[in-house]
Length: 177
Ligand code: 5GP
Ligand code: MG
Image (cartoon, rainbow, N blue to C red):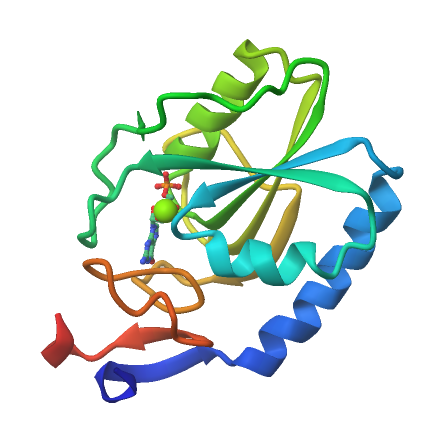
């Protein structure tokens, strides 16, 4: 697996140090027992597990399955909700966690849906934010790292379902694509 990586963009230690800072801010921003964290699967799984364990607050955790990339390298432009049940968010503050903010369509669509379902406010956290114009007017409240507009894998992010378990964020070799 590691032979397929052209370069490491953000190594494990740097990610972990950044998560300490993000978690401290989240802890400061939300009182005990007010928050429901919603993890967008599967991409935000690793990020959320590492981030939320650093937040010493009582909170609830839910997951949502949405698809926009369908495993390839281009955003499909539509966001599909894949779950039969939607988490109960009425009158709650939600912390929505995703791996990466790219076109913004995913965060926009999910945040809108959460508001429709009665959430008081949707706060958003992403590990990565691509430095580019968004298709939707959305920015995240908590951002791990801003990166250039290139396709990355690792630390939860996949290419055709693989590389999510790389402990760092990297760029694939041309030969692996
Ligand atoms: P958006 O809806 O903002 O365009 O895209 C968000 C989703 O697209 C992310 O949750 C992620 O699944 C996928 N995505 C966007 N950029 C990348 C990337 O560079 N690498 C990978 N693996 N997925 C990406
Ligand atoms: Mg994703």
